[in-house]
Amino acid sequence: CEPATMPGGITETGEPYSAFVGLVYMFNLIVGTGALTMPKAFATAGWVVSLALISFLGFMSYMTTTFVIEAMAAANAQLRWKRREQEEIDDSDSTSEYSDDDVMGRGRSEPETKPILSVQRSGGHVDHFDIVERVEMGQMASMFFNKVGVNMFYICIIVYLYGDLAIYAAAVPISLMEVACGNHSCSAGSVKYNDTDPCWGSVTRKDAYRVFLSVFTLLLGPFTFFSAQKTKYLQILTSVMRWIG
Image (tube, rainbow, N blue to C red; front, side):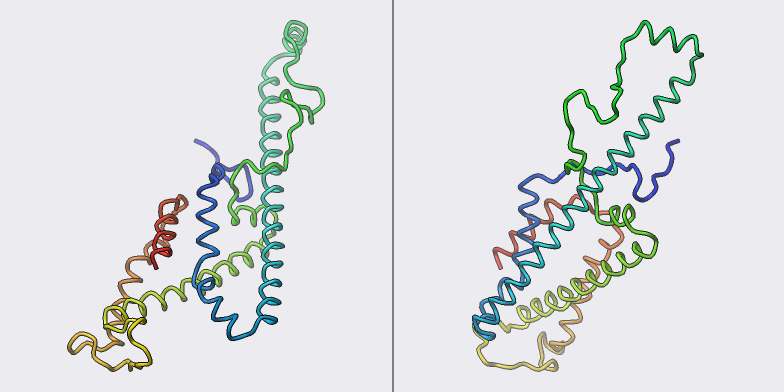
């Protein structure tokens, strides 16, 4: 049986995303509710404050992106180096099976197949920091952080994902409730509704919200326990739905 793979070790990392899939991911990250509400934010805060804040946030986004790219490059280099060390160990194990006379005889009869300098490659210079493998953030955290750092990383991810999910858990059921109960934003005007107002007969608007929230939780909650890594078509569907919205 194959040995278990430790975090940060030599793992079966995925292939890099294509340019199209990467574009879809970036579009879904950028074009969301925040981008749709930016004109309103500019109108409320004014040009000076808005431009200053968006410039600062753009700079911070650029810095964090470069940090992630550098970490991925370092992770690729470390994975290559570990594979190379493993190959050298395997080669040394294979040569140790022969006696000294066999090794000397093989050395005289067979040409050298491995370069003397370990940095040389038969195909020329290879940039070890070239990003050719997809390394997930959790694996990078295990490679570069100690136990405390890894725990802090996952705490940050949990807090971030909880906040992101809380936004959708509140926005989606409310939007469905508004549509189902007849409160369309284009025709409602300044009409205000209470939570106790009827929606379907004896069902109030608050009860309708709870129904849609339960349906939303039951449909998307199980995805928490899935190892869903190939989300190409889900991302495309999300982009289409956002464009339609």
